[in-house]
Length: 133
Image (cartoon, rainbow, N blue to C red; front, top):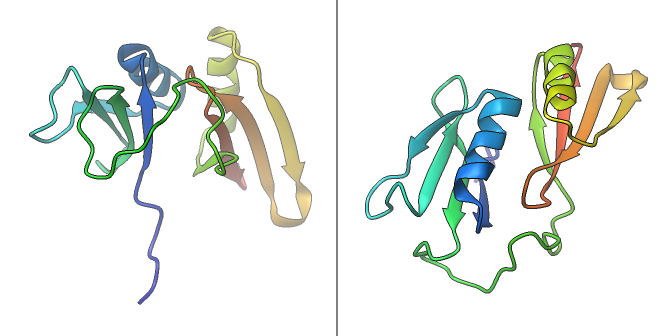
């Protein structure tokens, strides 16, 4: 057994459309409806350029196979942040400025990594990693 890659991140929100638009505008992810029995009103999946649904956005009332209480907009429990391997550092910084988002940058010179930290509308901290970019 081995882990091949991170499959997706699930965000439960009371701001479905705003959250989907955030990920489209900032990261260029494509918004698509989740598969049935999910509906466009309770679930949107954000796909990367390869068509992988890497961020699942669910409304508070969306049915879940494993349900637990969550508080949209609160801290994400034991998960500190979600890290995404990205490209287009300058473009993302321009989008952050245009969207008037707070952010923090960091460089790890030893491994050729530039990072941008910002939060989505639900207070999910994103670590956007740009290797050699």
